[in-house]
Length: 391
Image 1 (spheres, one colour):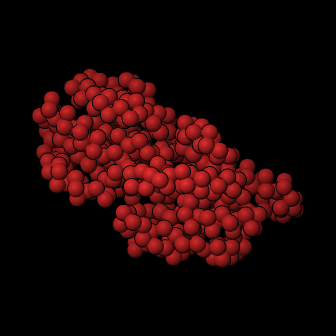
Image 2 (cartoon, one colour):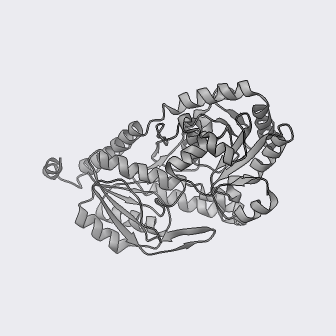
Image 3 (tube, rainbow, N blue to C red):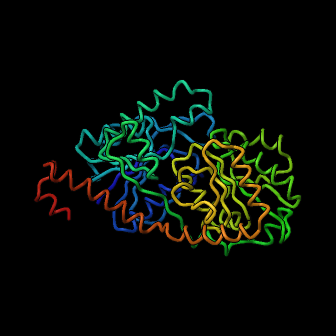
């Protein structure tokens, strides 16, 4: 098939959405499909795997609070020309901004089926940026946007059920995967731990993600303080950046801020830690949870998103009830004080992650594209002769 993918974030930008979309492009290309990628122009050139990929940059504007990122401006005419020139069979629209809306409009005009993706809980994020009054309006917009598509991909069953209750239609669960040959306990690096000031028997507590209000990052620091009160050999290591970074460096001078990391370097940071704290309550999935599990870490998280789907409490991780800050802290301390519990959680976390194989998930994605294309064919938009010719 000839597939169109529209997104406002893509590597080398560092976030879970960008990494997921890179896997989609790479996997679909390796399965033999031609991918046309549309994204806002960025300062750095995008990074994708070799393959049949046609990249198109469109104008954008900076996103407040997200340095280096832009949201795409409407590009209806540009996308319509691409649909015609490339003979696009189906589309995937990853973001719901002006660029994504113009792409959805162009696809509908041309009768080309489009899947959309729910990658970010924008209506939940708004409360963390002083715009809680906008939440209901954002939800209405998102519902209208996604319901105009042939289907919407969501990463968890719980999210699918919640969106269905809010009136979202044609929802398909498509979880995220992990490369277990990249994120593996084998990348544990004693020299890196030494650079952190942590000995062989010391405790490295890790957070990976944006340093931002919506990630509930202050709870991670609070939980670590409780750990440190009981284990003087514990250190808190943070990988990532964001709008709260400067404040956190001032208020927590003893923490180790490593900045953004990618690829093998990121995998080395994961594997060299012991406990992973992830207190976010706004994740659609939380790729970092799965990466930490694949790296053989003891994960402490809220019972939400990826953690809810993948972790069996007390077996492959520890789960606190959503919103219970005292329980999250209690579990973090219990994990830190019990080496045997850590070993059990680490072993079973790795075993669980091995089941989340990217190639299997990409075949499922391919099947979804084939299914919506078949609906287009049977609806009479494409004649049987044209369908045979394309096949």
